[in-house]
Length: 355
Ligand SMILES: NC(=O)c1ccc[n+]([C@@H]2O[C@H](COP(=O)([O-])OP(=O)(O)OC[C@H]3O[C@@H](n4cnc5c(N)ncnc54)[C@H](O)[C@@H]3O)[C@@H](O)[C@H]2O)c1
Ligand SMILES: [Zn+2]
Image 1 (cartoon, rainbow, N blue to C red):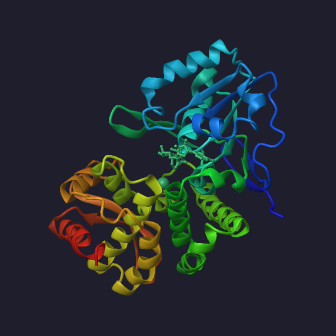
Image 2 (image 1 turned 60 degrees about the vertical axis):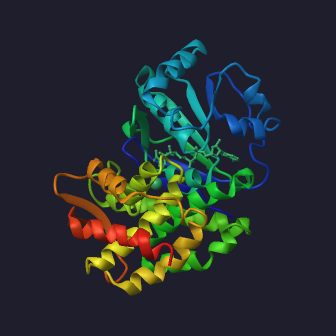
């Protein structure tokens, strides 16, 4: 039904396969396999994962930002070594983006590199982060500041595992799906926006858009795996999104912050005359529906602009933002980090979001 995707990378191609039906059916432990499993998933799927969980080579991780910090890594390394990890072994990750980042980073550096495979269990990980090679680890207050480009050897996507995911986590994943569709083309965005409700009610529709999102991301990462050029449009909604996450102490989940970040980017682009109010309006309703419940989270404009200025992509008085043009196409733009930008951001939070 659903053809695998073959993704090219600097260490060779890898496949993303799609499964339906009971999650983790047929999972089996074997010598030389080291499991890194999201603790919540381990509890929810205790029975299915029993062969893995009762084995001796399993590391359970609580999916928090502290868990994916460099400070925690020595304990993970020692755990893997105590379980007998060797260079010809494999690390299999089962979980969302947090477990992915930890497993990918460990697979890159422990013994100078071992094979790793991934079964993503969040929508964000299935539709977005599972391809693209990146591992991202936090150091102190710096988020995603240390990492590597280490693609998995294999990814297995089964949307049935998403049934136990919270609604907010589903919408976080939808935020990234809306983003990559917007980057693909205005028509692609309008198509997924029209089907948004069915994403949460119809598994076939969801699987269709997960695969479509991965194909759209695939095009960009194959052009620019190391994030120096074309791939950087994937940061649409992210400069503002990261700023919203940090200005609210991560009260807003990543993909929802990205959703608001896109709306804010569209507002700013219209205000700067780069885009139009009509383009802002075209996307506004779908974005706000996806961000529902988080419109009232207070975001201080000072904290927002402070975080923008600290963004690793920015230098001095200018800020690189990803903004739509008058046709709704998404591009990188260098804009002045000045009073006009500040007023547009402040105006957004005062009027547009509430009105
Ligand atoms: N490396 C990359 O390319 C990349 C890209 C995007 C995001 N990320 C990182 O990913 C992280 C966010 O990942 P995420 O959004 O996947 O969430 P997550 O890994 O933080 O998981 C979110 C919550 O869902 C739970 N969970 C996971 N699967 C579940 C399931 N099937 N049923 C019920 N609960 C489940 C987790 O225990 C956790 O409580 C961030 O740290 C972000 O920086 C990395
Ligand atoms: Zn993101």
